[in-house]
Image (cartoon, rainbow, N blue to C red; front, side):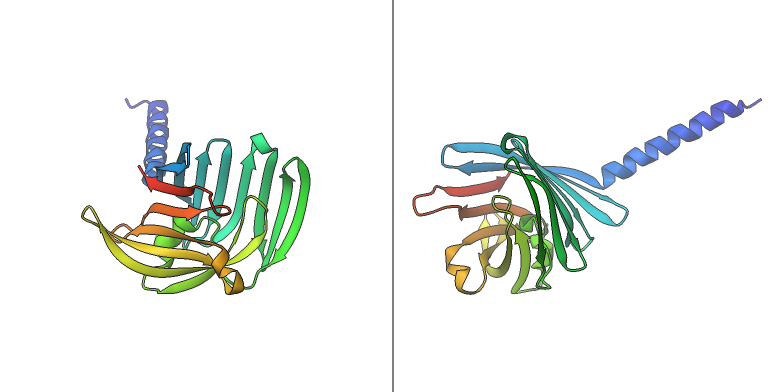
Length: 216
């Protein structure tokens, strides 16, 4: 005679295994090497999908960023924490308004910005391959973690290069309007996987070492 309790237990085990397999199918971790002068570290990206949303968590030393996005990579919310700087910020975009709350460099922080209607791509490297596909350029908005100011940015598709047999497209990211000349950086996207594979840019005044990020 079949033990009903064993059947129930077996069903539970199967359910747990299926749940784990489902999670694994929609979760992946990618690592990047970071270099700026003598400073070197590893950046870890963990992506997952659940309830028709994309979740991304990035970790670099003390910095932790958590993003919630739509399936077309538009940012819905962003959380940024850095215990070493006493920073713990959350930003949510609702009805065209960015709402920021938390602590920034040991001080209570609360601020709002009104969107100009461009998509919010807080981690441009993550979505760039998808967003730039079949386009020559596009504009977007993002918030700088070091000052929590909202910026209007533009991405311009540039040449495709051959990197040891891999076709990669250079995409230049810069501020818009009169501020365009004050900031610019290059992202490289694998043309076959549409994945971000390299970054090059200078974050600071003349003489500042170039920041280079490469996929491991």
